[in-house]
Amino acid sequence: MLKRNLWMLFAVVALAILPLIIHHGGDAEFAGADGEAEAAITEIRPDYEPWAAPLWEPPSGEIESLLFALQAALGAGLVGFYFGRRTSPAKRPDTN
Amino acid sequence: MHIMEGYLPAAHAVGWSAISAPFVIYGARRIVSLVREKPEIKLLMAASGAYVFILSALKIPSVTGSCSHPTGTGLAASLFGPTVTTVLGTIVLLFQALLLAHGGLTTLGANIFSMAIVGPFVAYGLFKGITGAGFSGAIAIFVAATLGDLATYVTTSLQLALAFPDPVSGIAGAAAKFLGIFALTQVPLAISEGLLTVIVFNLLQRYSRGELKALNIFTAKA
Image 1 (cartoon, helix red, strand yellow):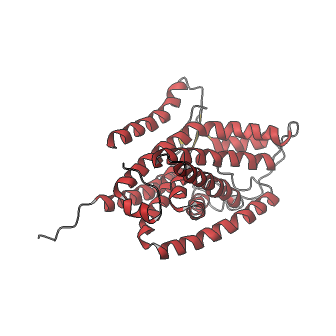
Image 2 (cartoon, rainbow over the protein chains, first blue to last red; image 1 turned 60 degrees about the vertical axis):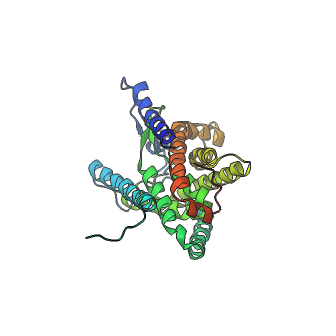
Image 3 (cartoon, rainbow over the protein chains, first blue to last red; image 1 turned 180 degrees about the horizontal axis):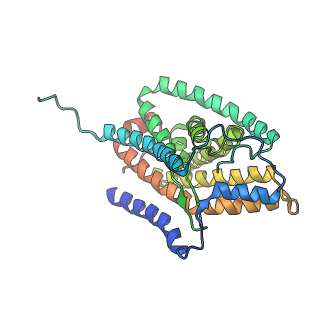
C-alpha cells in the first residue's frame, strides 16, 4: 500500500509542476480562476456594479497568505492528530 | 469556484440561499443524530472536515495557466453522506468569506450549493453506485472525489451563466465562457483531489476499519 500511495503522491506533485513547465516562458500569469470569472462578468455586463463588499479584507497579500496557511495548517494538524491516534501502538503503562 | 461578494444579482443571491438553507439545516440535524448513534465516528468526521479545510486552501497551478483549488468534499460525502458534508463545507466557506474575502455572505448560498451540495451529492451517488457494482472502494472514491470536484466547478459556471447571460449568445454562450475558465482549469486539479483522496482512503482502510464498519462502508483488503 505504501508504494502505491507514494506513486499517487508523486503524480499529484507532477500534476502541479507540469503547468509551470508548460508555461515556463512567462506566457501565463497563473492568476486565480475566481478573479478571471470576475473579469468575464465585467466583459459581459460592463455596467454591473457589485452591490455588496466584503465586511473585512486582509489588508495585504502577506496577511492573506498567513490566513490561507493557517487554514491549511489547522486542517493538516487535525488530520495528523487523527492518524496519529489510529496508528499509535497499544498504550504501555507509564514506566517513569 | 467562489463567486465574489456582491457578484450575484440580489434575486439570485436570495434564491440560492433559499435553496441551500434546508440542506444545511437537515445536515446539521443529521450530524447530531449520527454522532449520538455512533459516537466512535466523531473524530473521523472532524478529520474529514479538516480535509476540506486543507484542500480548499491550496491554490494549485493548472495547465490553462491559471490557478484554482480542489474542494476536498468527496471524502466526507462518501463516508458520511452528502448533507453532513454540506455543513462541513459551509463552515469552510464561512471562514473564507469572513476572514479571506473569498466568496462572500451574499453569495454564500450559491457557493454552498455548488461546493457543499452538488459536489457532495455527485460524489456520494458515484461512491455508492460504484461500490455497489462490485468495484473496490479505492476506485469508487477516486471517481467520486474527482467528478464531485468537477461538478462543483461546472455548477459555479452555470450559476454565473444564469446570472450573466451573454448579450449575443445568451445563457449558453455565457456558460461556455465560464466553463472555459472554471471547468477546464479544474480537470487536472480534480484528478489530484481524486488521487489524494484515494491515499487517505487507503490509510483509513488500514487503520480505521472499526469506523468504516460503523459507517457501513464497503472495505476490501488493503
